[in-house]
Image (tube, rainbow, N blue to C red; front, top):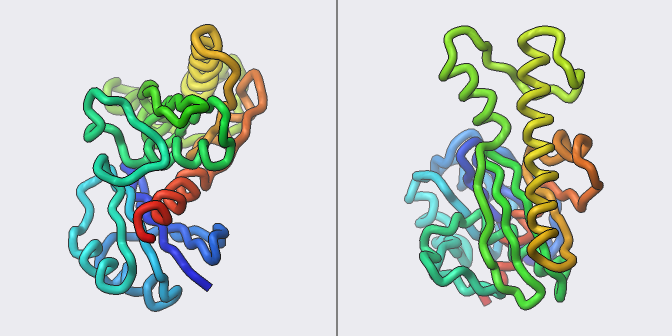
Length: 242
C-alpha cells in the first residue's frame, strides 16, 4: 500500500507522520534531523512519497536523502496548492499555516473556516468557502509566554503547563498558570468573536500540542485535531507528486 512520510519541523519539535493508503497511522517525534534518523524512517516504512514543512534551519542533506528514495516535495510559496493565498508577500507565509488551511478546506469543503494553530505561536488563519486564504494573525504561544515571564523578570520561575489550577492563583506558580492559560483562552474567545463580527458563519478548528489543554477553557466547543497539519501536508503532497 502507498506510504507517505509527512515531516513537520516547528520551532519546538521535529515530527513525522506516517500515512498508509491515505490514512494517518502514527507520529514520530524526532531527536534530530541527521541523515541516520531520516534513513531509519525510510528503512522502516519504505515510503513512496514524502513532504517537508519546515520553519527552521533544518539539515539540507535530509532533503537530498528523501529525494533519492521517495517522490519528495518541500512545502513553500511556490508549491501547487488547492487554495489561493494573499497576494501581498506569499513567500512570507509559514509552511505550517498553508498546511492548516489546506486541511480545513479538505475536511470542510464549501465552508468558511478559521483554523487556530496552538504551537510555539498562536496563528489565526481564515479561509473562505471559495478556498481563498484571506490571512489572519500571530501571537505568542503558551511556552513562549511562560519563558518570557521567566526571562524578563528577576524572580518569576519557569512554569510548566498544567491543567490543574484555580482562577485566582494561591502562589506564584498557580498565578502564572491562571494568567497564561486563561489569558490565552480569553484571547482566543475574543478573536473568534471579532471574526464573527466581520465574517459570516464559519467553522473553528483547533490544532497543535496545546489545543487539548486550551479547549477546556474556551466558551464553546470546537473541532479539535492535533494531527490536522499532517492531514494538510498529505493533501499537498498528493497535489504536488502525482
